[in-house]
Length: 126
Image (cartoon, rainbow, N blue to C red; front, side, top):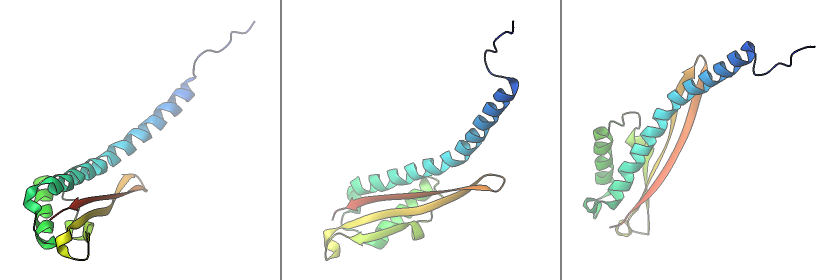
């Protein structure tokens, strides 16, 4: 009488562990990209809630965003290309929508790369 096999074989364990290893390496390379976005999103949300932005022009607000990005060590996000402004109404006195839109690219391993696309919009009222 043959004994019925229970559990996984050594080859099965090697396959499962190597798959989990690849997933962990990918996660460790992609997570900083999301953490940077969360910090940038927090900067924009805080700026929209801050009363210091009231009555400021788009150029002044962009300078404030750049300074806060430097303070939070967000050097991978270029505010000049990632931040755009949309007028809320016909005039600048109606307020702005500040739009953060950028792509982050990075290497996972070998010739495998990732691309993440981030978008966030806040309203700044006069």
